[in-house]
Length: 191
Image (cartoon, rainbow, N blue to C red; front, side, top):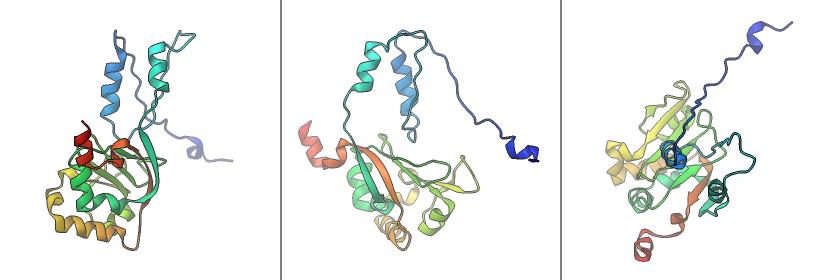
């Protein structure tokens, strides 16, 4: 016979909101833009036989995102990359096929921040400075390079990059926007 605790799992936390407005896409966009590690959104349209045309156009619209496979995290914390792409705001990037509470995750936000969410083992091996994540305090560490006091010191950045790329590479798959393919000089010349 099974012990009652084996099957007695707590329900996962969820957030359920009902919003009514004349322009629901504005509030949805603001909410989604504040959660950088999210890359999947479920949308329910109750009492509708067909998807509204405006929503359909948004969903089927072609976008300029690319998938980059097995790129080492150390590539993102060298001084040249940070100055060229992160601090200039020309790149938005998100790790995919990862779970924020179990895997190494990385995001570069449109607000010029590089955020690494690493497992405890990866964090300790990397030599990075960071804070414990609020998701799972025993196993996750969060490192935010844009707000770190030593993030502008080129020597410190090169040391972190070398230490992270040493014996334990962290290859992760990413989804990134089109700006990765352009240099900041080319991007400003095109506008």
